[in-house]
Each structure stands twice: as C-alpha cells, then as structure tokens.
Length: 210
Image (cartoon, rainbow, N blue to C red):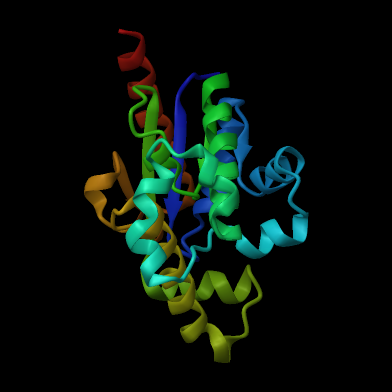
C-alpha cells in the first residue's frame, strides 16, 4: 500500500490505461478511469450517456476558451450551472479526483489529474508515450480500430486529448516539463514501464514522509 497518488497521461495506443491498472494492482490501490464516470454520474445527477459523450472533451468555443480562467479557477461558484455541459462535467469530475486523492494512494488515468493535483507532495505525474507503429498496431489488434481508418483516428484522438488538456489547464498536454516522469512503452515494454513507475512511486512516498 502507498499514499502516493499517481496520475497517468497517455498517448492513444501507448497502453497507458493498462499500465495504470497494473500499477494500481501491484500497489493494492484504486485505479480511477471509467470509474470516475460512474461516480460522477451518481454524485452530479447527470445521465451516464451525457457524461460518456462529454468525457475528456472540451468546449469548442474560442470566445469561451478565452474567458474560462475566471470560471474554473476563480471564485465564482454561482456560475457553475451556467457553464456548458462539458465544463460542468469537468468540474464534477475534478471534485471526484480531488476527493479520491484526499483518501490516499490511487492511480488516476487522464482528465488533467496531474494539473488538478499539482500542489500535492504525494503526487507522481507520469506521461506514457510510444512510437507511431507501436500505437497503430495496438489500436488495430487490441482496440479493434479498422486498419483503413487508423491514421485519421489516431490523429483525432491525439488532438482531442491535447485540446482537452490545454483548454482546462492552459498547458501543453505533451510538454514533458509538466510531468515528473515520461516513459516510452514501445521502447521499454509494458512490464519495465510498470516497474519504473513503481520505483518512482517509492521515491515519492519516502520523500513525502521525510
């Protein structure tokens, strides 16, 4: 068991979700991914269909994007119900993430968790990436994406995650300065990537207790 909160941002097809689940299993701590959707649904009152449709997708209004800072990270809670649906869901998921981190060690997949928990000493933020051939192969053979569509699909997924992250954090999703650890799952393999995250988590755990 550990009190370290591990956040994992990942390129599509890098295996980051599987890596996060293995790390959580090895440490005996919860892994929050699709579970966030279910818990948010219960706590927010939104339907599961709406949450799944908006999950990890940002509002696409440029004018709104320019003014988002005063809403999300300011002191205007009365305006939350006036936000677009995607943004209300982001706020609800953010509260779920923070509450999970308050309870102790866990692994959180995506959803800007590295930014939301950036001030916590017990946070280890990880970015999982992989080369394009590896990601394409994984998407086709493990995720079932048709081969003739994979090029456009992969690019769309990357853009969506990058836009979501930058919209809500004003930071670049793939800027490695925003993470404690960046690992290539295609170079290291899944098992070695897991082992390196576990080793880093132990360092963070010991440092937080010092």
